[in-house]
Image (cartoon, rainbow, N blue to C red; front, side, top):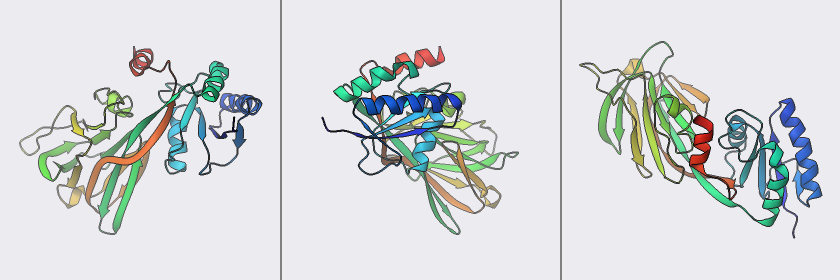
Length: 267
């Protein structure tokens, strides 16, 4: 068997560092090669930590297509497939090829401003908000067809992967990751004579694009939040959000079941 090249990314907690050291030793003994850098020929990325660790690794490495598996030392651990006590089983099954790759589509936001165009990518969600203490007023279109004049704290656009995160806390629906869609959930929407907003989530098929435009000059100061990271803009002309062609490939084993995981994490 050809030795496979593995890269480990761990967060800085004491538990994660201990698990990382144990994991390195076991991987080498099993015949796998562990490298300090993520290269084009890396065959597996192992993230030790929680979901935030995996998201951090993705953003810091420009969303690599290399298969990823997570060892959960965090709290919720929705993306993290392996419990620390199951490391031996994981290594055996990986070496035997007893796994499959599940592709998760990411979302993109293209922000057009007076001074340039900027693009952000997210695995979980992209949120658009105004100034922290004021409601923001936005014209929202789908595929260039006007839908609503929104007023509230903002909107959250989630992928199926992110449906169990911020989207769920806003009252959005949990979506099976085998579905390829975007979920648009309002954040504290207000309805009045001037503004009419959806008060529940809407679902968009994979090819649809959502466009957000400030209603007037006082609404051009917007914050785009992507997987918890944020960029602030003072002069927004438009923001387009859709599903990206970039995918995150997660390693899944035979006993992985999305709805069993949902039940175990939330019920």
